[in-house]
Every structure is written in structure tokens, then in C-alpha cells.
Length: 189
Image (cartoon, rainbow, N blue to C red):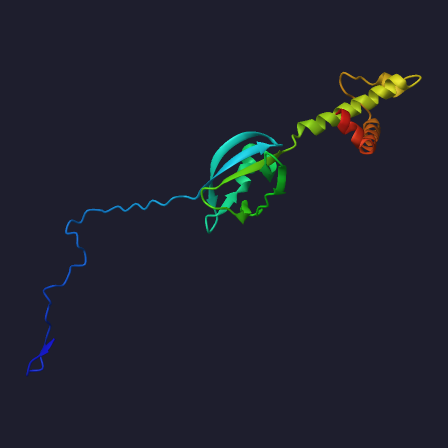
């Protein structure tokens, strides 16, 4: 800036000033930034048998170092995951946050881990065992009784019409026998 005698202020533009946009063409520029998502390789066993699957899983969380445990459990129908060594067996359970499904422990990018999963119990199996037990109790009453009770003679087995108290008694007997002979049932069932 220079000042004259008349108190006028004059602005001097420097000639080496750079424009704000160095590209004179106003074309749209697109920038893509590629970042590597941290992943690890998982060998998944089911009850010590397998591996049933070998796959790569991306790590999540704020620091990108947490395993997405809940996704693995849902995808493979498991109720729990354990650290696993094929030569020595199961280790500690893999703990995870129930809110976000991520592991409590952190993992490093590119590592390989071996996990063993405990399958979910199907709902059909316990219901079938329960119904078979009720039928066995009813048949035992029918065959081992000296004479079949009137209610058993009058009931129609093909429609499954039983008085409610008979079913309640059979359920109570079956449950009590099952609790007392748990080891015996595991051996043969």
C-alpha cells in the first residue's frame, strides 16, 4: 500500500498471486479414496468337527479391531463360540457385547483364528421327546394295569381326546422320571 499527499490510499496488486482454483476448467472432479478394510481369516468348527467353514470376516468397531460375533452366530446357527485348537480342543468362550454383537477382545488385521461353535438346540427335538414320553406313560398304564381304566377304554386314541387331568399327570410323571434318571437317559437317548 502506498499513501499519496492527498491522503489517498492506493492498493497494489502483486503479479505473482495465485488464483484460488488452479484448474481453469470447471469440470467436476471426483476423488476416490481406497482404504483397506481390516479382515481376518476364520476357520469354524462345529462341536470339534470340521472345519465346516473357512472364511474372511471384516473387523468392526471404532478402531476396526473387533470381531462381529453375533453375525457369525446367526449365519451358522450357533449359540456360542469358543477359541479352539484342533490338537487340544476347546478353549475359553468368545465374549461379545450384547448391544452391538462385537467381541470384547481385539484382533489384528490379517490374522487367522480357529473357532468352535456350539449349535443351537432345535425346538422340534425337545417337543418330540416330550410327546414320546407322554405316549409311553399312557401305553405303560394301558399295558401294565390289570384292567384298563374306564376313561382309557372310552377315550378315542385316533383323535387324541384325553381328559386334561390325565395329560397333566403324565407330564408330571415324565418330568420327574426324566430328572431322576438324567444320566440314564443321556446314555441311551
